[in-house]
Each structure stands twice: as C-alpha cells, then as structure tokens.
Length: 324
Image 1 (cartoon, rainbow, N blue to C red):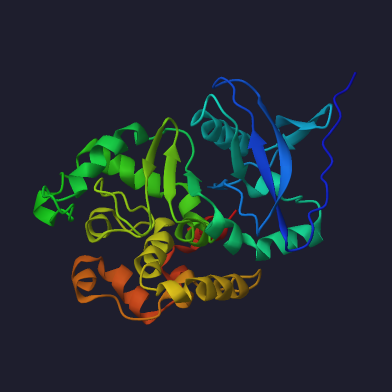
Image 2 (cartoon, rainbow, N blue to C red):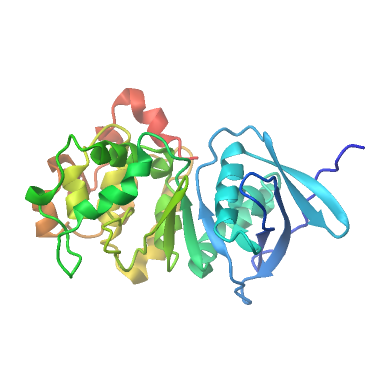
C-alpha cells in the first residue's frame, strides 16, 4: 500500500506559524515528527533554522504524524541533513523547530507571502537561531580549535593584533576562508536570520558553536559581525566580497532601527531591483579603528554606500545574486 502524502492545514493569517516537532531517534534514522500550529501571542519555545535550500529536488522524506495516520512530506537533501543535526542536539527528547521549507506551505502563494512578512517576528521570538552551514568539508573540522587564535591572550577576550595572528600558511586560515565562501553567506536573508534571535548557534557538520550577536564569545567567533582581526585576516575575494561588506556595516545599525532596515532591504531587493545590502544598512561612517584595519575596498564601498555588484567580477555575479 502506497504511503499517503501529507497535506498542509491552512495557517490562520498573521496570528499563527507552523512549527515542526521532531521526535527523538538515532543519528541516521529517518526523520519523524508532526507539524503543529503555534500562536504568536503564546510564544511557544522553539528554535528557528537558518540554512540554504541547496538542490531543490525533493529527494528525501520526513514522516509526519497526523492523528492516527503517518504521512510523508518530501523535503530537500540539505533540509534533511540540517534537521537531523537539529535532532542530534537532544537525542532523548522532542525538539521544536521552525524551518521555512517545511513550516510554510510553499505551494500556497498567499500563505507564503503572509509568512514572509512575519519572519521578523519568527526569528525575534525564537529561543535560539540555528545556523546550519552544511556538513564538514575543506578542513572545517579545524575551525573550532583555530578560532581562539584570533583572540588576544587576556582575560578581556579582546581581539588579537596582526602580529599575533597565525601565519597564512596555517591550515585553519584556509579552512576559515573556505567556510565564509559557503552559500549561506551569499543569502540576502542571512542578516535578518542571524541578527534578530537573542541567541545564535552555528552548526557545521558535527561541531557547533555559540555565536550571540549581542555578546561576543571569547572564542572570537562573531561570524556575522566580522571582528577587525577577521576582516584583516580573511582575503576579500570574489563572491565573498558582498558578505564581508554587508557584515562590516550591519553592526552599525542601532538596535531600534534594525527591523526597519530589514524591511527596507526586503522591499528594495525584490526581483528586478539592484540595490545592495550595504546601501540599505550603512547608516553612518565606519569607526576610525575599523577604517584603518579593514581592506581598502571594504571601507571604500562601505562608506560610499556603493553597490556591492560593482566589485564582484561579472562572471561571478549570477552566483552571488542567487540568494536561495
């Protein structure tokens, strides 16, 4: 007998959001859970996933319980991998996750449009923002041990000076550079999805790391708001240029102005628009100390609010602009 496909239940306007409850299981077991509806006013405890869709083929399946029935819902391979990593954090208990590829009926254009408008609230109200960068590759397993080298050896957890940084030949340097080249850093929405949660965790394969946007960890991994040492240390290359520039300026937006800035960014960056993230978020000049230590291109385009497209080679622009 063929397994039935899950049919979405409509979400009620702007008062509800879909949330996935993942049942506990062993690492390689198929995903099993249920989709529930949560009211924004109730603020249920859930984590919000930030990831890239990757290949859009729905080649994986998750089994969803609906009453006494067990129904299948097709999902992408990248979402399947991300959800298994989310599940592995709590192997003995269920976990609540919001992920747009599952919690929003992508075939219902009206619902999808409504939920996109609510993403700011979804990421603001979540318990944690979980950034899934993919599985380990290009030496990424070296990064957790390498990052402390970017922090000054003092109790304040300050930044290491240029003279204290590891040599560029250090394998950790290349691993970190390759990490910043991953597709997640080229998504427009990564700014909102990483800046709004009160607490942010980075997950890459089998390792994870705390990354609060408001309280820098002593590990030196600020990820979204690049530190001076990271800006100086990581080469400004090709498709990563836009990510670095927007990261240079995103932390300069006052807290009260963040959501309006995100809304403005979403409006200006609709299909057909060519307005850079830096144009929207750069509201004041870079601090003098950042101006002195950051690469010349980064500072010039950050201060002048020029389009990041102009410094991305023409043959790489399509890749850079592929935000999904």
